[in-house]
Amino acid sequence: MSIQPAQLRKDFPILERQINGHPLAYLDNAATTQKPRPVIESLVHYYETQNANIHRGIHTLAVEATKAYEDVRAKASKHIGATNTEDIVFTRNTTESLNLVARAWGDANLQEDDEIVLSLMEHHSNIVPWQLLAARTGARLRYADIAPNGLLQIDSLRKMIGNRTKLVSITHMSNVLGTINPIAEIAEMTHAVGALLIVDGAQSAPHLPVDVNQLGCDVFAFSAHKMLGPTGVGVLWARPGLLAEMDPFLGGGEMISIVRPEGSTWAEGPHKFEAGTPNIADVIAFGTALDYLHDLGMENVREHEKHITAYAIDALESSGGITVHGPRDIEARGGAVSFEVDGVHPHDVSTIVDAYGIAIRAGHHCAQLLMRYLNVPATNRASFYIYNEEHEVDALLNALEEAKRMFGNVDSRTAV
Ligand code: PMP
Image (cartoon, rainbow, N blue to C red; front, side, top):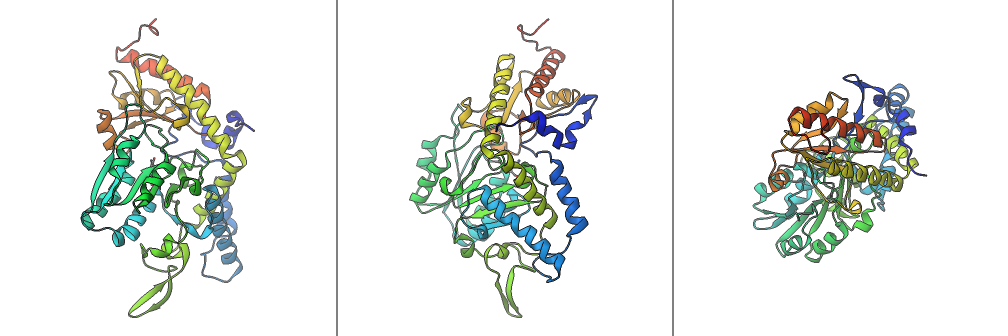
């Protein structure tokens, strides 16, 4: 059944808020999403009835908490079509998942003059860990270009991937342009030279049906907080066998098998990478978020977003004096829509629309390489999720008219 945002909104207490005397229109979902009541209640329920440290005790609470935590590993695995639950590692966020791979795989497999291939549309969390790895190993970084239509220049990428390439790390969906990249095609190019393909799924896992086997990547990383879950939970999936090849990232309790004075051996599977007490309550609440999304159906989530994104792009482009970045083909993009209002600084735009209760983002969106490519210091970004409705886009457009009026940039079609 298709998504009924007006119904869903009742599950999100925060959407009842008034901001500056107006109903909140929350259009900053690429940064983080709001949480439905079942997710919030799941946190309270855990602390009121189940709280115990996991994998350690044999008392009833510890067993219950361990089961609840491990059940979410299975849900996260299913969410991305993974074959084995044991290939899922819980981290703090996408950023930590990528850093983990850079350390645990990168340090052991890269050396001087090897190449790491990225793209110009990457989030800093998919750039900086590789820059640090390059500095440690003497490897070189290369960045694939973007075409004027906002798509990745796939031929430039193909030429860049060669015998020196050891790893390619690319976003599945851009948090600025909305672009969805052709991961399966990139996987073929990457594997043809024996390199590893890492996918930043921070924006795709919340918004699209994802199947890591169809994508053909070796690593896939995403964050719970961008998909109705709590902050502080990330997921790292690695193709079967890869985790076993990697050394630990952090050392401590729970990640060992045997500790002797002269050294230790490691636990098997994901536990090798989950040192210390994990974020138990938030992982369990993330399981509730995954249930919520799957009750809706990821196909339906995607359909709703295509609809509202097309509506927003159309409205922004026909309003005059607004430049929209990113692909126009709705099949090739997700719901992060970056734009500029001619002659008005993005921070001013954001402040003005906030006065109308509308939350959008202004800045470089942790994508300074992309800003440089677009030749702008910053953009505004509206980004959508399951609870957004057309009237919120209309409210944004009205507030943007106010921004244009205030800065003397009134389009002839809208001037009165
Ligand atoms: N990659 C992309 C494409 C993102 O949009 C984000 C979050 N803005 C991240 C990585 C980093 O996610 P987190 O802050 O949850 O680690």
